[in-house]
Each structure stands twice: as C-alpha cells, then as structure tokens.
Image (tube, rainbow, N blue to C red; front, side):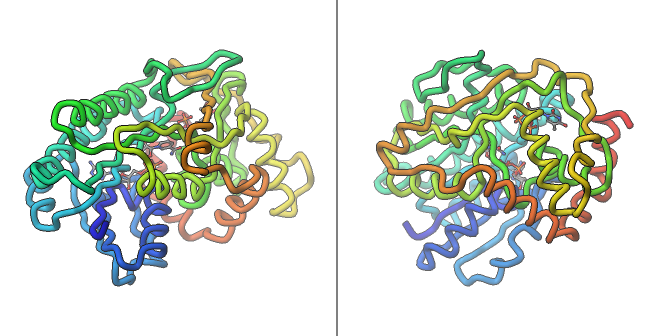
Length: 349
Ligand code: NAD
Ligand code: TYD
C-alpha cells in the first residue's frame, strides 16, 4: 500500500489515525481529506503537518464531481473513511445534515473508489469506520457482537447504520473490497467539547455546571482514542476483506460515575478541595430517545488480530485531563465563536 486516503483526518479520531500512519509508515503517502466543519481543526495536526509523506486537502465528501477528479488524480490504493457528522445531540436537531454527510457522502466515496479500482480490485481496500451505536441499546446484560442485528435508535446511529449497509452492499454487488469496524465511545486528546468528557473538563475549569442527562444511569464502554487508532491500523493491514470487527474497551461506566471520577481527578490537578467539582453536577432533561447501555464484545479482534486496549481507564483519563490542562489555547480556540451559540441552544442557558 503506497497511497492511503484518510477522510475526516482533522477530526478527533482521524487526527490520531493520520499521525499514526505518517509516523509508522514513512514509505506511504498519507492524504487527509476533510471539509473542516466545526469539528475539524488543522491545529490537531500541527505537530506532523510538515511531514513529507503527508498531504492535506480541503474537500467535501458530498461533492461527487470533486471526489471523482480527486480519486482519478491520486489513484489511491486504500481508503480509511472516518469523515462524518458524529454528535447524537446535533442529529436530534438536524437529522438531514447526518443523512447528507454520513449516507450520501459515504456513497459518493464508494462510487469514486469503485470508478478508479474497477477491473483491478486486487490489493485495494475501502475501510469504513463505524460505531457500536448501530446495534441499538442494551438492557442490563448482554454485549454487542459482530453478528448482532442492527437496531439504530437515534438519527445519528440510523445514518451510520445506513452507511454501513451501503458499504456492504457495494461489496456484495460490485465486489468492492471492504472492511467495517464498529467501535465504542472514544475519549482522549483533541475531542471536541460537545461530547461528555471534554465538555465536563472545560466546564469544571470554568466552574460551570455539569449537565447530566436524566438520572446519569446510562452506560457507555470507553476506549482511549490511540487504542482505537491502533485497532484501525491492524484491521487495515491484517483484517480479512468483507469482515466486521467490533472494537471496545471492556470498560463500562455509568455516566454519573465517570463524571464523579473526572471531578476527583480535576480537583486534584487543579489543587481544589476534594468534592468541589462534584458540586457542579446538575441533572438536566434527558436526551430524547437516550440509549441506555452500550457494551462491546471485542473478543473477535483480540482472537484474530491480537488487538486489545493498552491503557487502564484511570491512566487514560489522567492523560486526557493533563492534555486538556496543558492545551488551554486549543480549548479556548475551539470553544470561542459558534461553540457558544451551540451551547446556549443545547443547554438553554
Ligand atoms: P469528529 O466529529 O470529531 O470528526 C469528523 C471529521 O469529519 C471532522 O474533521 C469534519 O471536519 C469531517 N467532516 C465532516 N463532514 C464532512 C464532509 N462532508 N466532508 C469531509 N469531511 C467532513 O468525529 P470523530 O469522533 O473523530 O469520529 C470519526 C468517525 O468515527 C465517525 O465516522 C464516527 O461515526 C466514528 N466513531 C466515533 C466514535 C467516538 O466516540 N467519537 C466512536 C465510534 C465510531
Ligand atoms: P456523548 O459523549 O454525546 O456520546 P454518545 O451519545 O455518542 O454516547 O455522550 C456520552 C453519554 O453522556 C451519553 O449517555 C449522553 C451523556 N451526556 C450527558 O449526560 N450530558 C451531556 O452534556 C452530554 C454531551 C452527554
């Protein structure tokens, strides 16, 4: 593999994947295609942007003419597709934006890849990065397996499920070599502060309330973002074409417990009296259609590819908090401007 296209490389997970590929594969040419929406930020790749094997291209996956030209010019050997609208709350206010990028955009990319690879599919790969949310919501027991039926419950997960179906349909119909992975909730450096953990880190810093939806009893399975990037690397290089791999942290937390843990770490790091940040916790109206529990069974990727999470959760969370405290400028930049409007609209204050 020489020319790899990574879409959404300026986003949270994408920047970790781009960085890993640039550093680990100096003989590859790594192309990052990103529209730089509110969630994409070239600051995320400042440390590697001068690398000789890295190329950034600002472009929208909804623009099929641009994609066709771009693919025919660069003749990629592989695609790792991460570009998406990714926040459930935004999908509740604007579902069509999710249909557009996550469904139409993905089909545009599939078409562009198919056009240049047709007749020569050997050693090509279209890797679609998806989410565990496509499987729906679990009760108190059970896990999502690769064979679990899709049952998406939010506009976000419905759009991701639809894109997964298109990707598999392109393999079945046109023999496009594909692979799909479905990962649990990621956390770590460079996550946009609309998602639970960075939002709470930012609010604790500024002594603002910590909005917990409903009773805070919903459960998520958390994975450090660099471990997800490692899994993507392994699946891209060693995964079997046509397969699905679930990726998870074996690490379930109730929202209220994870926020309390975060509060205690923040108190210690900020030199505040124990219990100070917890007082900021405020229960707010629940998210509409809020999925109760996600939990991944990641035994297939462990057995077949030898991947497993490398970090204990507490260690990963400490690293994450340190990163946000050391990167105040980044946090201030991304929370200026439009973020304030989003925040007031979402949390009505
Ligand atoms: P993100 O929102 O942080 O980043 C998305 C990136 O895609 C941004 O850089 C944005 O500019 C870009 N983008 C959006 N629309 C685009 C368009 N039309 N054309 C080109 N680029 C566009 O998302 P993330 O959290 O990094 O997630 C990346 C992928 O991983 C998504 O497909 C998401 O569904 C999946 N995923 C995320 C998580 C998670 O916990 N964050 C978990 C599992 C799977
Ligand atoms: P989030 O980070 O948005 O990820 P996802 O919805 O994809 O799992 O939310 C994680 C959990 O935290 C989810 O159960 C919703 C909850 N949550 C809150 O309680 N308050 C908030 O302000 C946010 C953003 C999320």
